[in-house]
Length: 119
Image (cartoon, rainbow, N blue to C red; front, side):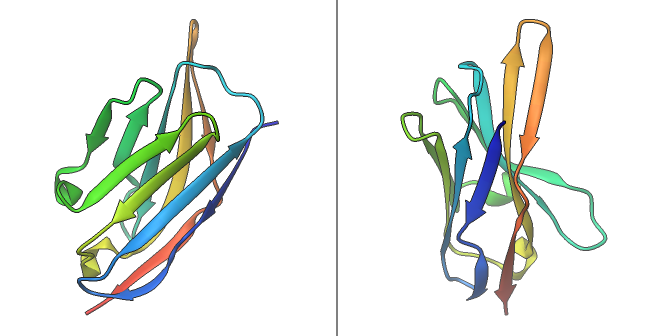
């Protein structure tokens, strides 16, 4: 059974930094993407950043040049360094693993971690 455990959220002042970590346990298909989504109150969940098993990254325009996603395939871990945080970054951040299967795809989700940026 695949489980995702997140850590690293918290309260920080604007301009500060946080690092989110997500450890994936269980067996996942070798072709996959790991990423972080966020959902603020009253808003839809949105993709923040993702990284494929081959290392290709993708970022939301709102976080480019501020957030950096990385992964350690040997440890099945995905990290996201968040710098220059803004109040509008406040949200619940959820880790996602998407398996790219021959017949489709399958998603796994973490429980979410709260990030609050004060002005």
